[in-house]
Length: 184
Image (cartoon, rainbow, N blue to C red; front, side, top):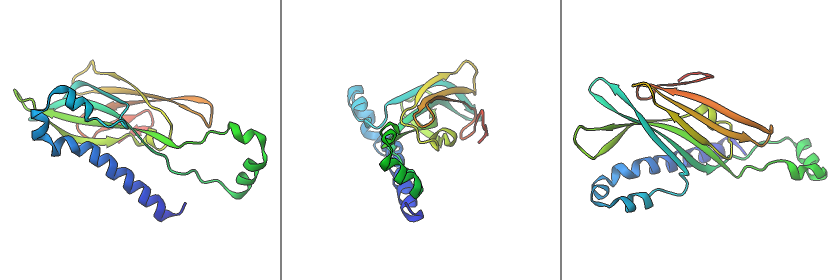
């Protein structure tokens, strides 16, 4: 895979994500008129998990946190020629995982105007520390005991290393989060 195809793949992923995240905003007036089952049915199947909770306040704007898992196509893994020939001739190559899809995790800050049903996505961030691992699954648990702070535990299984993976993410004001690996 060369750089231009990687860039095209990345751009496609970002366009899909942007479309998924902007659809409720663009269809805001129709959502207000839709019943709750229509709204639930409008969620794409590529979103297997959503958690919402806690509260944040940034001056005059406040709202809730939301964590979203989005399934997307994984980028091809690069292997060198000797690995390819070894995989072809090795009977154990059947045990090596082939990742066709990956789970990506995003945190959103959603604002609610007082007394109104309409909500607005203020900020969306990709949890890069997890998403770069290109794992097939992501499972979420959220802790929101403190105002202006949400802790998200993202867990998965890395088939390549045969290990469970978990990353703790602490989100505060819109766009700000830190993981056990450092602040963003």
